[in-house]
Image (tube, rainbow, N blue to C red):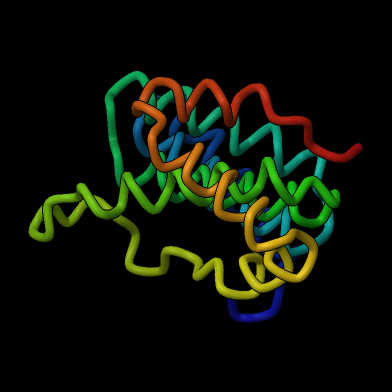
Length: 158
């Protein structure tokens, strides 16, 4: 986040490896999520998709709503870059529902959950208002498990 994406990727890969080595699944998933963000910002979209999915599987297994929302937003951003605007709107809609149901004092969410403002602007520019609303609402009504499954089934550009 300080502008040195290659170094960030290197350090996050090292951290992920160490967390996996000691069997710390939650922190490995957090490292995977952060690694996915760094790869996405470096336009390594296919690799980013792999790490977002890995993180979502783990967070889905433990039901961590805040971090699932972050992963859904990350995959939504990848879909925006791929021109899959309706699917992206669905994931952002699901993330918004998960965030709205968070416990304010949980402390589980990263302090730097990425703002989807630019992605939402791109989606709104690409879709009609009716199409955006339909996709967003389709995401908002998904259960936690269905939102994770929708994300895991999302195509990511190669």
